[in-house]
Image 1 (tube, rainbow, N blue to C red):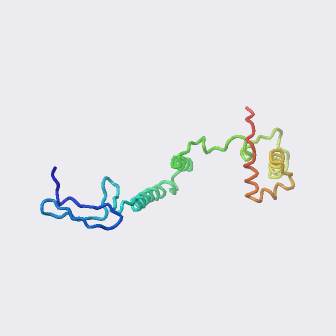
Image 2: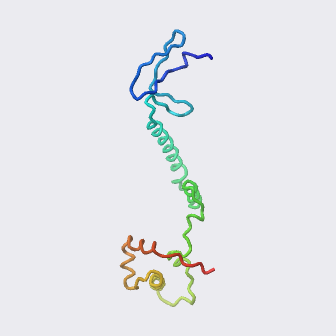
Length: 168
């Protein structure tokens, strides 16, 4: 086996700094504290913190570049942006959909059974939401606005809801 002294370096793996003179023919190899081999940073102390920090830095640079070039582009459609974000998160379209039976989804998909009466639709919508909240959550309509105003209480109530059976 041939060793090129001009291309070689020596490193001692030890927690304490140790001098070790290695000779190839008449040349003493320079001793180093760290070196990169196949893209991995090795240190004489045998620790991985520097390598982990380096990898995090590389990943941050890539994510920053993606963010600038893809996520915040005005030319990018909302559909393409959401598709990209789902792929980054490792989710499929079905996994980000609201499961059936959730109250917000029911309100969104609700179809009135009769013709809309004259008047401001907001009050009718509020009546429909009040009726659903009364049926599913047991909150009287006069207390609904107060409970819905307290975000944590409202969220905890919605989490307690069992999924409504699928009518189909």
